[in-house]
Image (cartoon, rainbow, N blue to C red; front, side):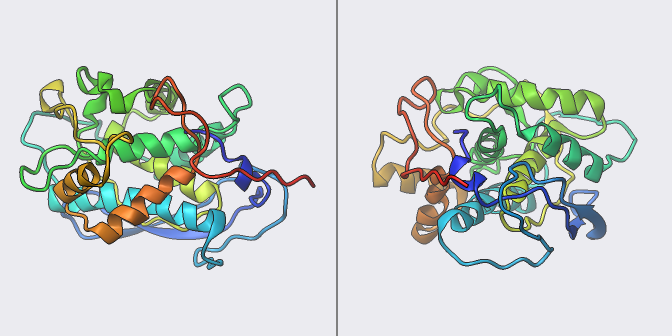
Amino acid sequence: MSSFRFVRCFATRARASRTSAFALGSMTPLSTVSVSFRNRIFPSVSRNYTAQTTEKKGGKTAILWIGAGLIAAGAGYYYFVNPELGAKTLVPTNKEPDYQKIYDQIADVLEDNDWDDGSWGPIFLRLAWHAAGTYDKKTNTGGSNGATMRFSPESDHGANAGLKAAREKLEIIKKNNPEITYSDLWSLAGVVAVQEMGGPKVPWIPGRKDSEAAACTPDGRLPDAAQGSSHLRDIFYRMGFDDREIVALAGAHALGRCHPDRSGFDGPWTPRFEIKV
């Protein structure tokens, strides 16, 4: 996954204020933190963004809504149902993360002509989703809490092929902000990708904790594109989703494209339209 060229014609470098709710602890009351969009990464057509922007459903806007759903439904669902992992956790520094600063730093690295099709956005979203998509409702294991993809064998699972590049790219942000957990950083990177592409505002709550390698999830918890509907149901039912939600979330594959060295497939899932201005 990586190209946003069909969206490139619609986004712009604009800033708008927004407000997001954050929880500083796993079950603490929500506190409101002011967060503003960073400069949009794809300049073409001027467009103003507000916290409550509403657009036509369909096209690239619908795809970005689905991308937001992957974050909210996957990471968010897991976080509220299973705020703690049973494994040993890594304790972050006592300094409270500056989420706006971290958001801006992630936004600053999204556009990169030396990376694939020019944007880290799709692979950041894929990283956030694959971290969340290992959740098991019955056992309360896996999910975005823990960031266990940092370790083998989870990092070597076939479904996670290619994500090392995204993790290494975000490592720069982590080194500059050691107070944020990897779990929150990866999740926030997915939010940044959706919002900076001109998608919807994604309610995001920090407080996830990192875990040790012992908490790595077994292989096979993420969807296999070569399998059929029964496989998809098994995977998504395990996380607590129904058929309607499966169809909606699967639509996120229209964002970015496939790579033979990662999924075995090549090219976008949907036709890409280039608009010259």
